Image (cartoon, rainbow, N blue to C red; front, side, top):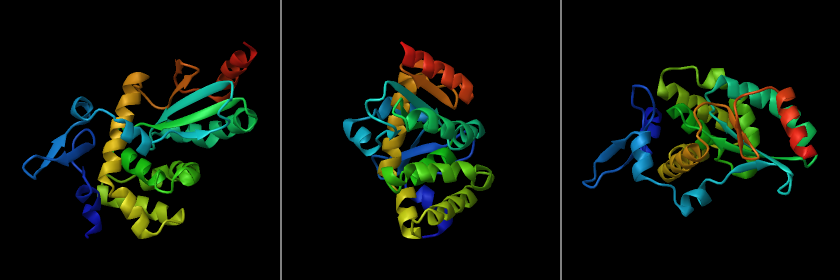
Length: 225
């Protein structure tokens, strides 16, 4: 298969315009294209979707404080959070059993969806190391306007993480996974009213992007309750 078209052939079309497109088979055998908003109305998340796309979690299940992060792999501020703030949160709160950290992906563009498909390729054990690599190299892999270049850049990251070309391609071509990921994203995005990235829900309260000191102030106050 021509590598330039492997994303489109898998059920994701590299259409132009303002965003990515989600595709599904049409009744006549043709490919029907629906925008994200239309997909939300026609492709509600099912129990099978949530099973296929579980939350990725750091920290103890019984930690007294829970942080839910909503982030896009193409968002520079998300990269800054993951590379500079999250390590400090992990050392001070997650590894010490005080915070349970739940990572949920946001797909504001097609490249972010593709990167998330690659991140989930190796399962839960490989997820966060792959996420670190994606954010560290964000400018390099996502810096092209050519979808074929971005797709090849992601395959290269997959190889660096230990995946074979066939394994990376299988993940990036998994149309069922892409549909489930979009459905789950839309469910949580509506539930927690996600409008920008990164966004955080700390014990049910929504917060915008912030530095470590602001996180620490909120967490310490909740731990003191």
